[in-house]
Image (cartoon, rainbow, N blue to C red):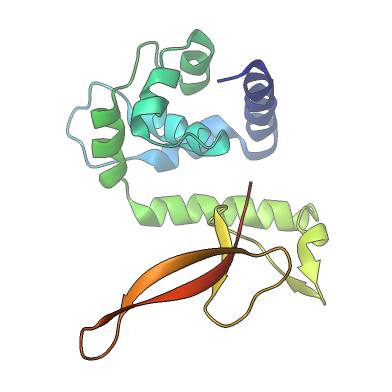
Length: 168
């Protein structure tokens, strides 16, 4: 992680602790593991912070968890393996995570954080944060394109061009 990413992440953690009571919200990261060695809260916070800095996978994220600052943020003072991250993530209760997402969304909406995202009075929010739009038929000057292989009703493969936008 670069120094700039580190500072941004530190600001994010401070903001999330102040605005959303991040330690309390981390209780939503419960999973179905029996007597876990690594607390669910630490796994959940590491996964969340990994998303914030756009870590490309669980192995690079496991490396980040070795950093003392990361361990302070996550509340667990040891490295978290990529196996533990994946195993716990697969066992997290999606309804608890949805409740946390609703809490955050409502709080952001009340604080008018989404006003800049409104288009013609409608709120537009990208939850994927990766690829907002994809079309086989429409494109604009800012679109990226790719060739994809598809199958028709008879099972014959054919290629078509897709246009899409991707966050950089």
